[in-house]
Amino acid sequence: MNKLWRIGVCVAALAFAVPAAQAQQQRGGGGGQGLHSLAANKSVQEELKLSDDQKTKVDELSKKTQETVTEKTKDLSQQERRTKTQEIMKEVNAATEKSLGDILKADQVKRLKQINTQRQGPRAFSNEATQKALKLTDDQTKEIKEFVDEGQKAVREQTQGLTRQDAQKRREITTKVNKETMEKITGKLTDEQKKAWKDLTGEPFEVKYEQRQRQQQQ
Image (cartoon, rainbow, N blue to C red; front, side, top):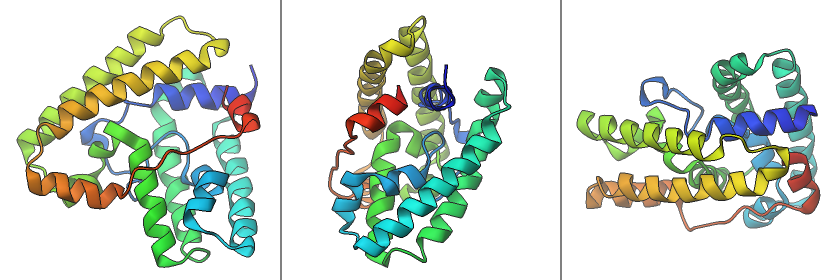
């Protein structure tokens, strides 16, 4: 089992693992896969219309950041990965966002944040920044946490026993549970909150991965 796949498994395990009470994450960026890898994704760079110089700088930043993540997680046990990866990614993404602010234009940073929020799915509602932007009530926050916990349980139960070769099935299960959970969450939002959510996510965008990236994730 290589390091990249171990990190990928940890990312999948964290798909729903962010409780509202621990939601002090990076700028709407989630645990799991880092902001640095999203900014370095070819389809995202095309969406942001990065110049060649920006691409070079972003790619260098991503490589350096991935080395930092690997160094911080390489000696962690499976249990420690479950409990510590979120905090590690919070620190990494905060540093990445600061560095990206020196590379990207303001509108590019905004769009990157929107794409990242979309990618987080239900986890985004566990972020303190999202909760404030949507002005969620205590009751809403509690209900949403219950939905996220239910989703976490569903992913865990439905992916139990899957192996490295089942990465595609794992993604399909997670996507399905994400969609169901999002429907439950948005059903509890007011029209004003739905508008605020739309502002946070922008136009729908599907992050595309090249074959090599898919193999590394698996």
